[in-house]
Image 1 (spheres, rainbow over the protein chains, first blue to last red):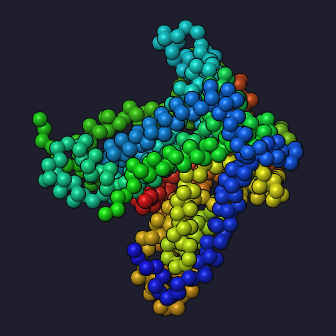
Image 2 (cartoon, rainbow over the protein chains, first blue to last red):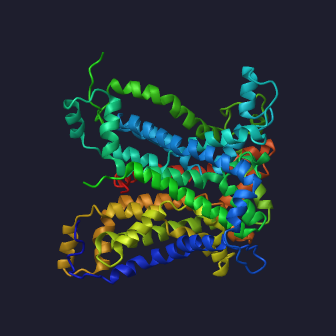
Image 3 (cartoon, one colour):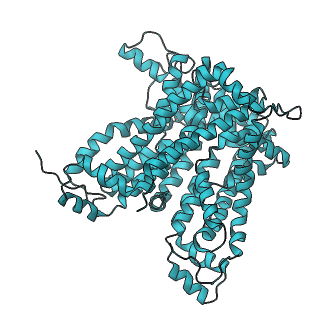
Length: 303
Length: 290
C-alpha cells in the first residue's frame, strides 16, 4: 500500500475534510438520509396527512401476504425484466466490446458510437420514438410492416394490450443497455497487455474462446465488476419504461408494472407513503444483493 | 483447420481478418442504429408524409414544419418555450459545473491527501455506486419539502449534484497522477489548494470531461424533478414540457412535433459525447472496481 501525502508529513490533514465537505454534505442529505428515512418510514403508516404511526413490520407482511398486485404482477414482471435485461445487456455489452476491440481505430470508434448512443436517448426521446414505431393503428410502423408482410391482418395495440407490453419493454431496455459499463469493458480490453496473449499462445491456448475465458476476463475483473454494477443499477433505474411506453400508471392490466412503478403508484398516486417506502427498501435490498453476487464473481482474489 | 492466431487487440491498421468481425456485428449495429435514424427522419417529415399510408421510414422531402409547429404551439400556451429552454440550460450548466467541482475536490482529497476515515469514505462511496435514485423518490421529496426547496431552482439542482459514479471515476483517474510531481510542488511550498488547482486539475482533464458528460446526461433529460418538486410552471424544464407534449400526442401531427422535440433533447447529448469520446475512453480504462 502506498503512503499518501508523505509530502506534508501530516498524519491527519484537516484540509482534506474541507475538500470533501461539499460532496459529503450533499451526499449525506440526498443519498444517505433518504435511504435511512425510507427504512424508518417503512415501519409506519405515513399517509402525508396524519403524523406517522408505528406499525412495525406490518407493511412488509402486507406486501407479502395481502398485496395481490405485487405478488401476481409486479414481482414476476420485475424478475423477468431484470433477469433478461441485466445479464442479457451485460453479456451483449461484453461480446460487442470484445468484437470491437479486434478492429482498428476508425471503424471501432464509429461502431462504438452506434452501440453507445441508444443509452443516451434520454427518457423523452426514447418514449416518443417507440410510441410512434409501435403505434396501435394501421399507420404505426410495426403494424404497417407486419400487415404488408401478411403476418397480421388487423393492427395490433402493441403498447396497450397487456400481452405484448413486457416483451417490448425488454427489447427497448436491451436496446439502450450499452452505456457506461459497455465503455468500461471496451476500454478495459483495449488496455490489456499484448504480451499476455503472446505468452498464452505459446502456453497452448487453442482458440479465441479459451483466450477470452482464461486471459481477457480474468485480467480485467475490476472493469467487469464496475460494468456489472452499472448494468444492475441501470436495469432498475429504467423501471419507469413501462409507464413511459404505455402512457399510464398503472400500466394496462399491470402488464408492464415493475417495482419502481409500484412505489410511484402507492407513494404519489395513493399517498400511502409508509407502504411505498417498504417497497423502496425491498428494491434497495434487491439491488444490493445482485451487486454482492457480482462482487463474488469478479472479486480479485488475495494471494 | 486453420491455425490459431492470437487475438490482435487494438490493431494499428485494417486487415482482412477484421471483415469477418464487421460482418457479424453489422446486423446488430443496424438494429441499434435504426431507431436513431428514424427519429431524425421522422422529425423532418412534412405534414403529408406524416399522414402517408403506408407509412414510410425515411423522409422524402425534409422540411422544418414540425419544429415550426412545436414553437408555434408553445408560444400560445401559458409559458413561452424560451422560458423552458432558459430553465433547462441554467439548471444543466449549474449541475455540470457544480458536480464536477465537488467531485474533483473530493477525489483529490481521497486520492492524494492523508486523513482519518479515508478508506471508510471510499468504501461508502463505492457502495453508493449501487444507489438507485428512483427507489428513494418519496424520502427525497420529503427532504426537499422540509428544506423549503419546493418550487425553487435548487430543488432541480441540489439532489443531483453528488454523483457517486463521478467521484469514483475521477478518483480512480487521480490515482494515476504521479506522487513525485505533487511532492515537488509541496517542496516548493505550495498549499493543498494550489496543488489541486495547478497540478492535479490540469492532469485529470479526461476524467473531468467524463464527469461532466455523466452529470449532463443525468440532468438534461430529467423529468422526475420537475414533475415532483416543482408545481410552478415557469420553473419547469424543457424535457418535462416535452414529455407532457408527447403524452397528449396521440394525433399524427402531434407525433411529428414529438419527434422534433425528442431530437432536440437527443442531439446535444450525442454531440457532447462525440466531442469528448476519447477523454471518456481514457477515463474508463481506470474504472476498475475492486
